Image (cartoon, rainbow over all chains, first blue to last red; front, side):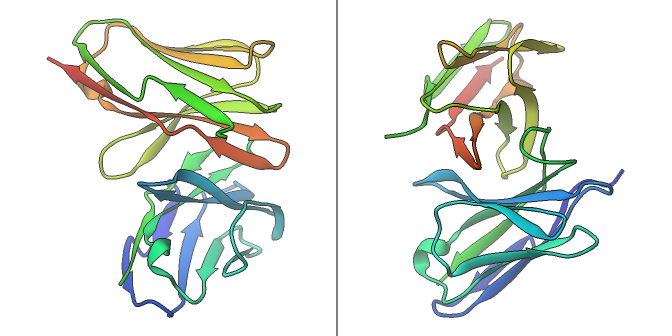
Length: 113
Length: 107
């Protein structure tokens, strides 16, 4: 089976712009979770989708949003980018939820200038 | 206050040594995950535990639910084990992460 893929792998944006990141889960996996990793805060949970529904959400402002499509692919969007949004954004897929093993994608490294 | 605490933060070992990384958490959990992250960012899930002990090759993970504590052991460590090891817990509808343990194994 192909692993979790994320596109793009690297992205440079300007403060104030918006960005959309994409995640394709392992075939058959219906749960996709998103995480932000920064040197200062480490890994933080953004949100989790299952069967096109947001199941859980971390403590991030409303500028961070996401969605999941019927084929389980997921996108996350960050609007009005701030310098502090520079981070590695990781998605992970699993068969059901965090109670099952998660398979991580390679991440998208976002730099906001 | 961090929901998940790991120790040590940094660890240097000689090849062949037995290594232990500890994780303590303060919330009720449904599962605990041990993750490995190599330079460059890729994360691999090593174990998912809700009770007891699991073993994969040279890696062993244990969890004590009553004490809210988990350990990751690496037997006969090897330079390729050099990575950051991260403890993560699922509590209700949230995931919480430790700050990671950076392990360097010297040949």
